Image 1 (cartoon, rainbow, N blue to C red):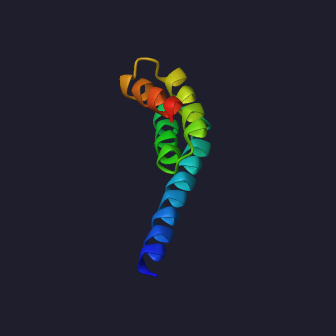
Image 2: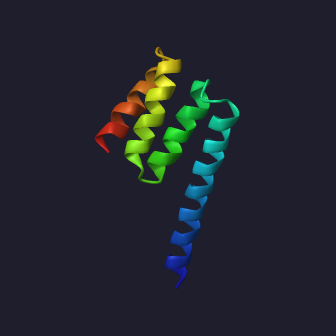
Amino acid sequence: SKPDEDEAIRKGRKGIAVLDARLAVLATQEKEARPLDTLAIALAADGKFQEAAEAAKKALALSPDDRGIALRLGLFQKG
């Protein structure tokens, strides 16, 4: 049915976003905050809040003054 197809498309897009973000993190060897933050956001959008929090913690360690990352980390930890 149409709603099921739409849901499959949405899940596929989220999966692609996570994969793209993982590739960016790998390309930067986990040494840049922005790709890690992007990965955290993509994971959270896919409902993977524990993994999102882990990525956000790494991002925050690289950019400790970034209030946006800190705020998102708190949200991801709450689920």
